[in-house]
Image 1: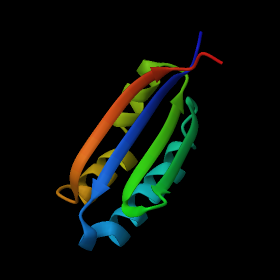
Image 2: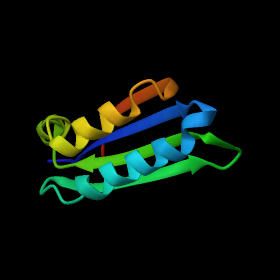
Image 3: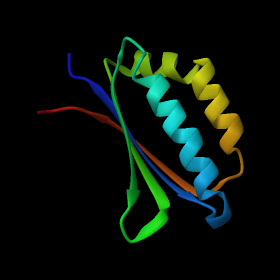
Length: 96
């Protein structure tokens, strides 16, 4: 079965970038400790440091659902509530 990928783009409010970065990096570090999370990359857009992109790879969609119930994810969501002005989420399947 092909792995499941989530690609998330978040535009963070300018005054919240440092706090957001700390929260998402903590979440990413904890996420890759999950048995079915195979990758969690966090990048910032080169020409706009307020924009972050996450590439998350899981065994399947159920593993993503489990991730979203984890304490570290809930902590991240609570810590970053109201910090972003835009969010785009793409659910994907790995094909190669």
